Image (tube, rainbow, N blue to C red):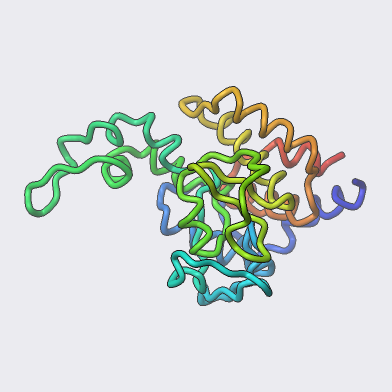
Length: 241
């Protein structure tokens, strides 16, 4: 763990250029920040270890296979590990719409687009860098907004990538579980309107203990802290031990 502490303390020096610590309420800007200032030297997806380049092209791992969303297999997408719907539905604009949410044809709309249009708090939550991870597009599509769980009887959906999706639940590969857990715990701590179910929180607390931080997770957290101006203490507390 002393090695992780050293990595954590020096991580800020690896930023490609100086940034001002300030959260953004722009999802498009958040994705660019992640690509250019956080993952610039670690272009690897969360779930399956796919490699991607600066143009967002993915090289899936050997043996990766999917029968669905094939057109999204070769592109990296920035996934909300805690799905936007999970916190978005706590906003009235998401559930019911708003008087300002009317399209060019006079038709009202609600959901993500309405909440993003009129509610700045939602935009900040949607753009929180700690909750954004690169994913193979097809995996992101199949994960959808489903909660994580253990699926002992489910089949693997992606060949060599041990990601399982069944009955609107997802079991991620073991190497991603710690990062997922510490992201869920962070989002609940950071935003009072977001609450996990009892069973989901117990699972995340368990994964947090079972799967400790890696050197990359410490570097990632430090870079985001320098950009966004706040910490994910569920990561940093382990990095500093």
